[in-house]
View 1: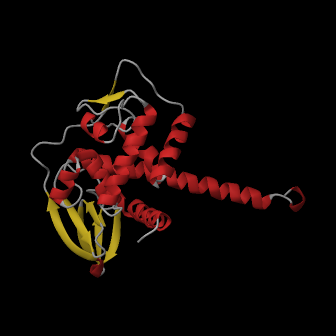
View 2: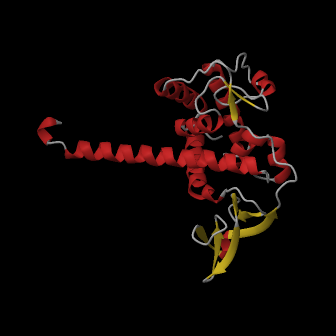
View 3: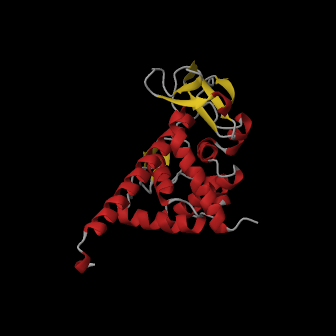
Amino acid sequence: MMSELQRGQVRRRSLLLAVAVLLCVAVHARAAERVTLRHGFPLTCDHHALMDGRIRLYLSAGEDNYIDFAQDEIAAFETIPDPPVAATPATPQTSTRDSKLTTADLHEMLARAGTEHNLDVDLLASVVKAESDGNARAVSRAGARGLMQLMPGTAADLGVQDSFQPEQNVRGGSAYLDALLKRYDDNLTKALAAYNAGPEAVDKYHGIPPYRETRAYVARVIHEFNRRVLAREAEEKHAASARAAQPVASR
């Protein structure tokens, strides 16, 4: 039986892998390609080509943005057509009373939820950024509410009585994301896609469903998560250098 500490280490490795390759998830006006790697990790690219004995995955329609893989690392390619009807946009619409929390308040709230559910606080912050931009009174056109945009039925299942109450909303949204990560074996792409489009859509397409809105959402969260992780690492490195530069007598 894997301990919580071990599960946390595996989850962090999985998230870092997602950060490394998920820049392949992009919005396309035409069909994209779903790529299955040998280790099972799925990703989406615009197109691919054989270059000097390696498979080059192009992240956009141009030729400048790409990732190379050995041929034996690629298991399969599949064309993903755009659906006839795009998914309902989840852009938050602010209610009449704006309740944007301070950065410190929100960070403290997310840190508590992250500790409880073994989730990186920067991942939770990235989801909040994409869902509501930190507005606790945000309401989407589909009816999702609060910081982590919980639908009323989902909120009720999670025991959230008031989605506009920031602490309840974050606790419920974090529990839901945690459950999705467990459901998909810590595959961050599938968990985020399910958070946006629902687990049924992810199960149907065996990965990120071919919806423009969902692909854009996953890419947006991953981009923000990557930005936050890099900023945190740079800050920690700077602090370590500053400590090392201090005279011995002052330590």
